[in-house]
Amino acid sequence: MMLVTQKRRKVVVIGGGITGLTAAFYMQKQASKNELPLDIVLVESSLRLGGKIQTLRKDGFIIERGPESFFDRENYVNALAKDLGIEQKIMTSNAGPTYVAVGSQLYPIPSHLLSGETPHISSFITSGLFSLSGKVRAAGDFFIPRSARDDDQPLGAFFRRRFGAEIVENLVEPLLAGTFAGDIEQLSMSSTFPQLYNLEQKYRSLLLGMKKAGTNFLSNDFIDENKGIFQTFSNGLETLIESIEESLLPGTVMKGVKVEEIEHGKDGSVHVMLNNFSHIKADAVIIATPFNMAEKMFSKHDLLNELGTMKAATIATVTMAFKKEQLGDLDALSFYVSRNSDFSITSCTWMNRKWPGTSSDDYVLLRSYIGRVGDEAIVALSDTEIEKTVLQDLNKTIGIDGEPITTVVTRWKNAMPQYTVGHEAKVQRIKQELQEHFPTVKLAGSSFEGISIPECVQQGKHVAKEVLRDIF
Image 1 (tube, one colour):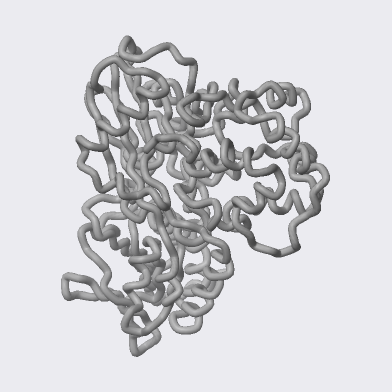
Image 2 (cartoon, helix red, strand yellow; image 1 turned 180 degrees about the vertical axis):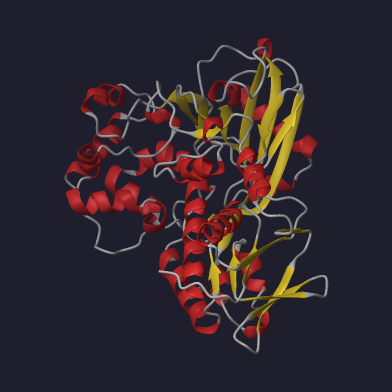
């Protein structure tokens, strides 16, 4: 229960991405509801809000420069949209066939391949994506012992032990490269797929566990060719950002201002030092920036050095528009690329099929990813060189007649946090160290406890509640 004091409190939120915006929104909402004497200041170093969520509305196309959708398993984003009054603008994706490129050939991913649903086992047996020996090895999951309890391990090692190398190379790695842009031999199982680890611990067989729990292997479009599971907003993801910004009180947001340092105040307050030679005196601070920016704020105190050991991948999104007659008639929603293939892209999605309304009916909108851990140099090429490279890759698989009508290349440097083995324990140590030296300063965001939009929304809402509890 909050004990309301007459003294006004001030909270500074550093970072105007979805985590910071969510935190500011829910603190303002709670303060209004409970008549709390609270001032909120959100400081954003760029001239726009939203972080990686950035929608380009151009020439009749809706192009997402960053993430293009969210999978809202726990309804975190839907609840936020309802609180904002924009829930009616949410739309659900179409679904359709998904492929993996192995060598220079596209292989369809069998429906419910690893969902454990026996009616679809025939699609696995007849699939050309795996050899007979690979299929036999995958069945070994039913007999292989559990992992050691509480043992964090690389994703690659976990899935290879359960299903064999071929399943990992031709299915697991391509799909996860599209999600994390990382090296599955380094990514942490407990930080990325704790639910699958828990199923293995409970049922021993992962396939049996998924069947018992009604859980699918990965939350992706290939899970059900008849029903999409992803969501966005009818005019693009940035609708969410714009709505939150409009809801914040005038004077809340400072754009184009960078935080240089976090300092102790003499009266127990925190001083947020800005690059315009001013500072903000705060009762509490929420840092919702990437880890590398957060680390610099404490450099004078020799704190949070473990932030410097975190890693992030550099990627780019490449969206191309074509006339329909320029492409063949492949029935596909998307395809992913195995590392065993001579491709630079890691995935490609038919955005006009997944999201009707992103282009007019006579156009095709293709969105590709390039860059991942160990293969990031390509992102430094010029737009023209990137366009040429992506077009060559697409021609290997789907065949395109001519050049794109328009191309949008967006680079994201060090944008994909890598939750490597030991990540969860590292984050706990970092937060504990911060609690000891700056008890009213909190960390949240994609660098720490979930990279997806719903996970960031959940972190923002949670830290808002935590801060208000501490200062009132």
